[in-house]
Length: 440
Ligand code: NDP
Ligand code: HSE
Image 1: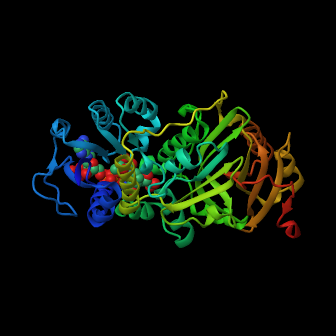
Image 2: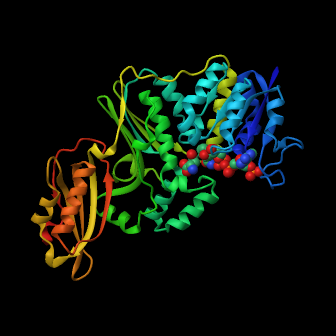
Image 3: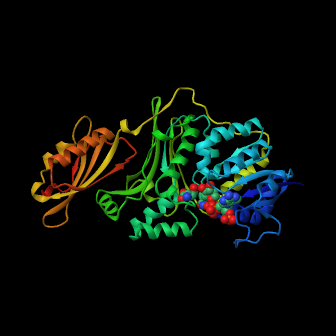
């Protein structure tokens, strides 16, 4: 039996997961690839740090050159995160003829094409299954099993930290801060959790998925992105009153030769399977022309789920060293369209003085072009004021902005205006529901 020596760059949550899986499943993995596998070196930042697992003396290093110079190392696994110094390390690893596995979505989203080209030029593999939705096998399934499927839509919950926070706020009434601290303690959150809570992490993953399913690079500046830091308990409870849950949804839809991408806190119907995806779980929904709808569900973060995806890439490379995986290329010109012009359903909430409340006048503010009020609910808050909750069908961003300006101009008592997107996932017939008609 031969031996393959590999190096880990990083020994935090994911690196430790990889170490643990390679230790506990050593026999099975080696039987699968037909050779021994050994972690020869591990690059860390702080060599004196207390580790959760014990490693043989001399394995840990802070010197990347030491790894690069050791020509017996054939696979380099990058689980440090961020752009620096990881991009340089990955490039040096590929240029020196090493296969690379990474879990780094930031890097793949921004430099994926460049480093995949570098891998091809050096006849080595670069795999990144763990970069999107941790333990859910997605990238290799899209690349291989769905390689000829025309996919028109991909949407889902791509970030475990924000799903954990929203689930805790919704189900247990937890505060944002407490839930975030728990996600950090559990190892789901990024080193800087701004990337999670402001939607950047989900955006990187959505870009990676879009490149895979549509075969085109998308312009990051044209992708609408909104995080969950402004979501309040009131938003959550009012969404519930209309039969929805709030999720950080990342979605990319193709329509003819255009794709529209967005990451935003979104109301999804309580009965839809995405509403039931709780904790740090992720779920992805794909719509293919031939295969129809597919759903992928599992743990999108954490030591062992993410470690599992990294190890599967290592095994994939060692089983099939010579062939790199080819990326899909679109045969038509597809461009990324700004969300300004894309139609969406919206949830609008505000409070107003009961004396000025006039249902017909309110509805008419929002109805123009194809926009209609499809649901409306008035919730008495105090003797004088009420919360008004509306679902608006089919408005584009500009139409909606105009309607909101008109609302404030028409009703002086309107306060606390909140707007969120709604995704019902299927074309719904226009079926207005004035839920509190009896009280008006
Ligand atoms: P951690 O912060 O837990 O670990 C980072 C590791 O990298 C640490 O061991 C740290 O060293 C080391 N490191 C940091 N900077 C340097 C440097 N300049 N030189 C050498 N080593 C360095 O990160 P995670 O394990 O959580 O994440 C790693 C990657 O995996 C990221 O790209 C992340 O986005 C991705 N990922 C993470 C998931 C998760 O659930 N955590 C899920 C999916 C992907 P030291 O230990 O000495 O501090
Ligand atoms: N911080 C990321 C998340 C890790 O919470 O989903 C997995 O990519």
